Length: 81
Image 1 (cartoon, rainbow, N blue to C red):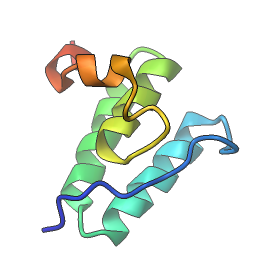
Image 2 (image 1 turned 90 degrees about the vertical axis):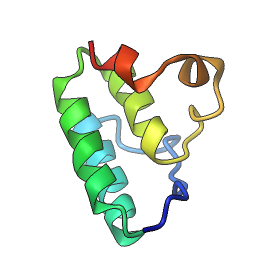
Image 3 (image 1 turned 60 degrees about the horizontal axis):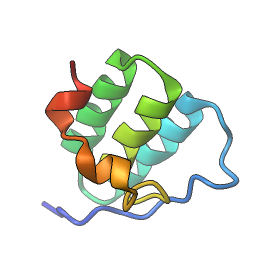
C-alpha cells in the first residue's frame, strides 16, 4: 500500500466541502489508499464545521494547510471528539 500522501491544492477549489472531499477521496483511491479515503470521508461527515473538515482532509492529502501549526498540533483523536 502507498503511504505517501498525494498533493491537492485547496486554493481555487470549489468552497463546497463535499466537492473538496470528493476530490480528496478520488485522489486517495487513485493512489491505492481506498481505506484512508473511507476513513477520511467518515470523519469529515462526523465533524462539526467546515474548518475542521478542511483540517481533516489535510491529514490525508497534502494541502496548503498540511504544514500549518494547527494541523501539526491536532491529533486525529482530538478531532474525533
